[in-house]
Picture 1: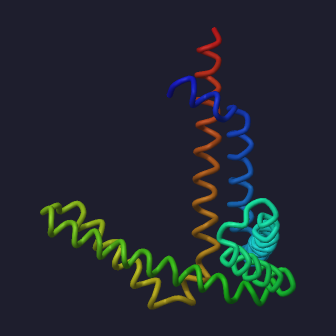
Picture 2 (picture 1 turned 60 degrees about the horizontal axis):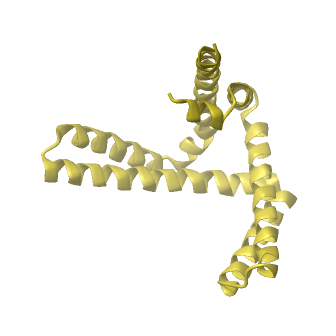
Length: 180
């Protein structure tokens, strides 16, 4: 780690980020439905505001005007629909993300297997097979995967949070060592 990396993010900001990620991870385990609904609501607000910004950007930059208007309106409609009915949106968006993840994992698996045969790389073949099986299992069991998604996200958030907290203290030691 060099000094430029340490100056990019203060150690305490990484610590706060770690605690927030840890808190979100625990929330997904304690109240998975409510936390998922809250995250979907934040997504709706993000899309709505993003749509507004897309339309407002036309005052400064008129390039790609048709796309900006189209995407701005679509984002605003989707965001507003989520904000008005977050529970119903949750039953649509979570399975959509699960299906997207399933197709992505299947595609990546096939790509790794193809690469393994092209380069005679057994490691790529194993990764490809695991990803392909994972993707197909998700696509076959979309409902089960949708129910488990909050727990998977919660696990990743907890691991990310703990890692960020540990790394923040390591970064603090590096900063203190450089200052000394």
